[in-house]
Image (tube, rainbow over the protein chains, first blue to last red):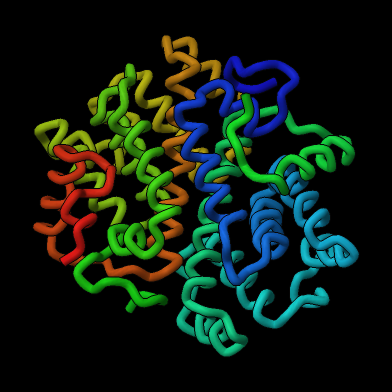
Length: 178
Length: 184
């Protein structure tokens, strides 16, 4: 049961933004800007970073929902999502994305440990400053979303089908639920 | 040196919020609602939550900035220092002590907020909205702390900088200042 009186049966962040839509609005706007606005990082890659950080924070709801969105967006390559969540350094993804995921995990653990070497590595693999910025901000934002969702003990569905249905909504965009 | 090119005259979070505006606007709006909007928690109490979380993440820039804001709102420096060093004996209400404890847990992991601490908060008269806002302020400052330190933005050493910034966030709030909107 959630720690506060949120609508029953509504999962994760959706229940929290229905509890307080005034704060929900900027939260969804931030997710939309980070994960859906035009970027040189694909929407699938950005969802993957979100899911990866959430898995490191052990936030089942965000990890599962963003993994489902990433699988949907990667289409035939959806297998890479579970590969990355399991062992990203050996996953069949670009060296650039690996370098960005290495930055993301440092942000998740202790952001002060992101080193000039991590940044050079990402730049050598072709990452732009904008992509590095966005990776850090996606990672930092999911450290917020994960804590919000788990800190209030919101409902976490356990059936994979629930997340597949969510993913279909998420790929359209992050709009405040009515 | 910051990991990306930021405007030199804008240290800490301030340059990051100018680096990408479409993400900065919702972050600023959220902060303004949570820290300056109508609430049964005072602005000083909400700044203390921000300070405790930033100190837990060892983010020097945010800790100094929100310490300054809390001190200005409180009119003294002792409370903030006591909250940071010895919460149990700090001159804040029992309810506030529990909320600050919840915030410290959120800083480590959302999963650490136990039903028993929530029960304790509620037994002291804390409302669901106060619990909600405490958790979200704590979570938001994890975003800020990680954003600021993850990109190695500049942390000024001069205490006067934080005094000025503290005054600005107390008197003008968290929305984008008009002088930034019309660029020099």
